[in-house]
Amino acid sequence: MMMGMAIRTALTPEDLLTLPPPGEDQYYELSGGELIVVSKARARHEKIKSRLLSVFFVYATQHPGTGEVYAESMFPLGPDTARIPDVAFVVQAKAKLIPDADVVIPVVPDLAVEIISASESAADAERKVQEYLAAGVLEVWQLYPNQRLVRVRTTDGVRDVSHDQVLETPLLPGLQIVVSSLFTG
Image (cartoon, rainbow, N blue to C red; front, top):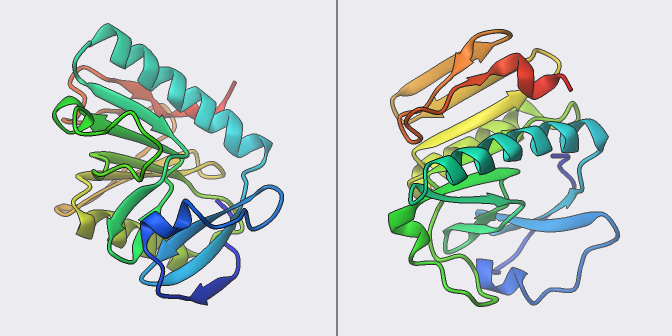
């Protein structure tokens, strides 16, 4: 995602639901009290996200009761932080806690995926990862299209999976993704 302008505020994740949209093809995130205007993704980013969503939806269909898949959904990561991962997976036990109402999702995802755009700084990408992990997200996947690389981040460390290697996670038993399939159509 492309990062934009940041403004220090006293906003909460709930407040983001009531703010007027920042502009066409933009949305808000909140990081440690900073209101961040993020530009919507472009074609390459959306193609990669679509491929990953397809894999997750097939997995969830073939493994009923494992959890729910979310795209571009806001998750509160603290009283002054809310992020919108490109893709997220919430295991079933937590998914049951999500009401069918227009409210902030009351849980953090178990898996958050960020597709890293060329315009996103390393510092901004790292800040997001640290916010996710500090909030209790178990795994963060950073997809780097130019390198055809998925960087898997957990509180235990970092693991890179690339090209024709198979990406697996203990969060989704049996899921196997050949990394190159995410980056080529």
